[in-house]
Length: 190
Ligand SMILES: Cc1cc2nc3c(=O)[nH]c(=O)nc-3n(C[C@H](O)[C@H](O)[C@H](O)COP(=O)(O)O)c2cc1C
Image (cartoon, rainbow, N blue to C red):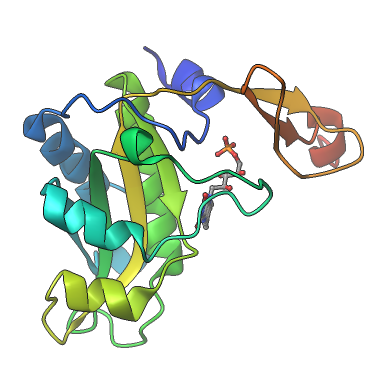
């Protein structure tokens, strides 16, 4: 898969098969995140791979799924089979603001996951303190985002946006994600 296809075909997925992800694939994603661009090359992020059923279940309670959908959360048998926790390390960057770095890391991992046939959901509506406790993080580490992963059990397509940014499910449970057109976002070619 080339990079353009990965970018165009990737969509957020929130329902997963229960097939276990090979741990090597998840380690490869973290290896990709390590190689992303970071301001001043600080590389202030650490990563945790979670596949233990017990911890997956605990984390689930601290996540809000699909704010625009009434029943957007995965059912028990559709939950992610892994999470990668993206963590900020204040000994490497003291400001405590890691969102730009984490954005680069998550995007890199999502595209690499797409190539591996994995589906992802970037999670920001999370209870960071509870997750920090669950993961028993050392004091210098804080939770920035979770990336949910699994093999896809849902179809999602990008549509041309008309009047709303809200994604929705059609009668076949296909997720539709409105995207602004190129004409709308490209101001000018100078
Ligand atoms: C910073 C950020 C935080 C997000 N947080 C959540 C979240 O907490 N729960 C969720 O279900 N989706 C979350 N998403 C996924 C977005 O809803 C999704 O990316 C958006 O609807 C566009 O769909 P697409 O990824 O298929 O293009 C988040 C995405 C980003 C970039």
